[in-house]
Length: 348
Image 1 (cartoon, rainbow, N blue to C red):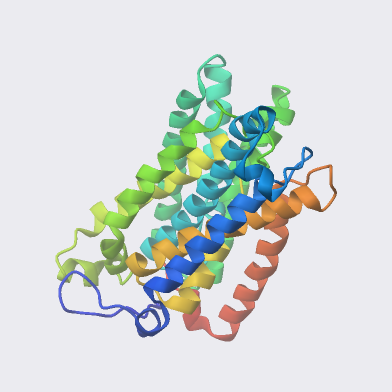
Image 2: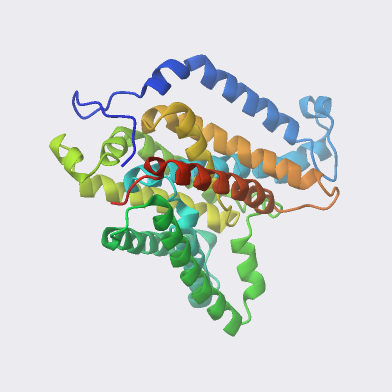
């Protein structure tokens, strides 16, 4: 097990040296200000271009465009990026493995299966009902993955990640087979390809649920850090290991399922962003969670803007850009772990 937070002064672990010396409140302020500025400028990107000064005093037509399309899209981008990044951070902590994330543990694939089942069984059901079904199936799928981790004798982090990818692949294959038999492959592509082009007023509001899940995650942040040190360590500090583990499971599943239902799957996001932030600032969940959320939101915002500009006026899905960048970073992380096995983490 690899972690740099080994404090033994009660249930709240001591912060890592990297966090103590490297992160300052003004850093968060600068990151937030930069993200807000980038968000404001991104509102002007699109087929109907809006100049920066138009955003300060929009005409009625421009205001309608902002209210119906641009602002909902921006909020969905920021919340999706922050949610999946925080979900990945929590999942890596509670499983003690840096290569585990919603996209490498079957969580996202289980959510897609749930959406498909809800569509088949309750075709006229509102989006909220489909979201609830997706949450249930993602929790079940992630729970099965955690059981698999408990049964794996090999504690190498890369091996565990490969098992998670294969497990997710099996779920995805079952989902694709069912969709193929029922001629729903085109609909399935909407959920498996993360894109914000269809986000409009009245169709994205359920994504605000991730804010509540993020609050719960922040309240349990110190406990997640302790659980990341192992069951025996957590028990000795008076933390109920199973309760905290399953709380993290629910938080991660809710975030992943809600984002998948609203905008689709965004690959590698929950893996890459938390790893980069943790490498720079340490493993204390409470300390790095806000930075992880801001970094994830900024990363998806950049992917979305690049996707809109790369072949303007056509649009490349944000998931495609994120997959290319995230895949490269994932390979670099694997090579780094192969050179230093201790960085790979351990299983439950």
